[in-house]
Image (cartoon, rainbow, N blue to C red):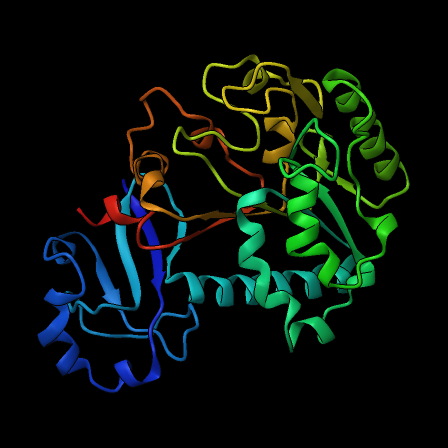
Length: 318
């Protein structure tokens, strides 16, 4: 039996005061086919908690309930509201894990970094205990850290350098090494941090268990540097592996393996742009018997929440 998937769309308090007007004008803002597939409930003050409404009422913003094969938590927002919602989500997790464990381990990928911009503003910049954060990269291009292709440079310029995270709490690759050596050294770093109890481990698999991974995916459904048809996707023993022939430049990469990604306590999939709509559709609705893209193999022990813009979610509306 199919279970429910919830999609949260951004809304404004003013729009919630005029549901009648909204229903009259909905055809200009959303696809007419949307009402046949999804149930929208309004939200209050841009939060993701549903409230009771009559069924089959359609609004341009609110909670969407859809029948799908897998239970997924999906939020569709404007890019601005995506950044706001993501900041709230990350801040709450930070508070939870620092309270429970005294630290917060966060894995970044390039795509979501620009949507962390609200975290470097008030009130989050002042309220978060950045000294307890530990930052990692889910994948990295084997280039100097000053190179424009470096994931570290992107993350540092866009986020890390703007908040007071201790430099020693940011783990990066040794960019003087070739891909295989860089992967080995990075895995050694992770193992050392597991031994010192900075990183937890999965009780099910004994792979490192990060508190939060902020991930993106490509139009081909790749996650991290795990590309369709590449051997790295099938690695089950190593924590970190490497590529020397990635399908797009630069060719040398290191990447967390799928078992490490799936050991996560929380994954935020931050996906934007209509060019990724087909991959989003495949991940959320395609038959489980179909050939699996890398994104379809992401099945964490913990929770996964999808943050989409309307372009990335466009095929879900048909």
